[in-house]
Amino acid sequence: MNPIWMALVAIIPIAAGAVTAAFAMRKISVTALDGMTRQPEIAPQLFTAMLIGMALVEALAIYTLVVTLVIAGKIVV
Amino acid sequence: MLGGDLWAIDTTGWLVIVNALIASAVLVALGRFLARGRLTSGVPEGRQVVGEFAADFFIRKARGMSEGHDRARVVGTVTPFLGTFFFFILLCNLFVLVPIPVVNRPPTSFFSATLALALCAVFGNLIVAARFKGPGGAIKHLFWPNPLQWVSEVTDVLSLSLRLFGNIGGEYMTIVLVTAAVPVGIPLILHVLGLIPSFVQAFVFTLLTASFLAGAIHHEERKKKERRHWFGRRRSEPAVQS
Image (cartoon, rainbow over all chains, first blue to last red; front, side, top):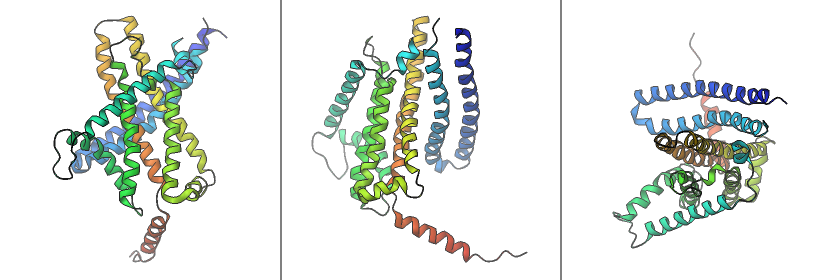
């Protein structure tokens, strides 16, 4: 297969994954910050919950990264 | 080249094994050093303060999941389990900072190492659950509320290992590529920024293991009581005035 097509196939998923994960992370961090500023006394609990949520979202982006790495490893110029 | 190299399950494997062994040796030496000397149950001082500070978070986590069990036993089992994961992964991630050319590759940037860690986490969870609920209870947890519950354990292995590998391997790859392009100055900034994911990924791995473990050793009786509590309250609620 043409390496340029392979590169496109590798690049498009990682771009889409990064964009969607960025939006989800924005939502998570903004709501967590809202909660923390309104109730500073539960900030540590909110922080750990935020980290778990971020990790779960991040996993999806990481899956696209892994797929991209697999495809990128097959590109032969 | 780089992508395939990072992703491959490393068959020669000496680097990952040597680095992991160095990390565990440092960890054991550190633990021995912190626990040396006279330990007191009163007001601690010196090294004991550092050790207790390090263990405190995991002890609190373990206390949170000890409902319905013998608290001291749960704390004694779960705290070392979680603490080992956290400090081992943290030390492994910090290997990028070692200023020696070949050694400075974190073992967690190999998929084989993270897969091994995730398998340890999930099977360790099963074993700890078997310790508190008996082997039958632990196996029942794999099939009971939902007969396909075991699928989630498999995906836990995948997601834990891939998350750690993706973050640390990606960070390592970025540093290598940027260093090849600009050898002076910029890598320093990248290393400083890389401290954040190193810490956060170790923390997240431990937190997720802890939450899976809490689900695995959760006591059935308590669940039943909770259900009764909620349904009872709902039935006895006053009718809505219209």
